[in-house]
Amino acid sequence: MPNPNLKNRVVPNSAVDKVLYNKLKEYSKETGIPLSKLLDKAIELFLKSAKK
Image (cartoon, rainbow, N blue to C red; front, side):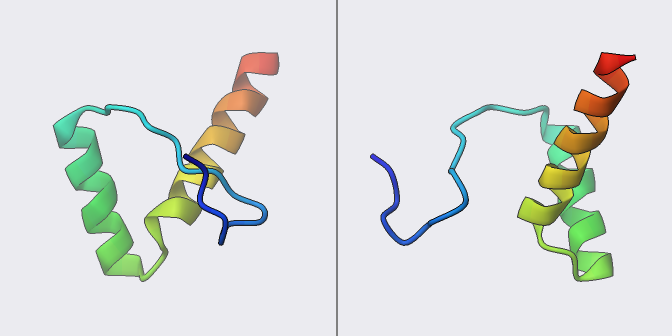
């Protein structure tokens, strides 16, 4: 069920590697950058590299 409070975002339901998730979570904690923004950037970079 979509979250009606989110206008420009979606909540993906996906499983990820525990080690990668913990590293990303720790990086988020160290930098103060929210996980959602880090995931946005990671997806953006992946899609750019996949086009090459």
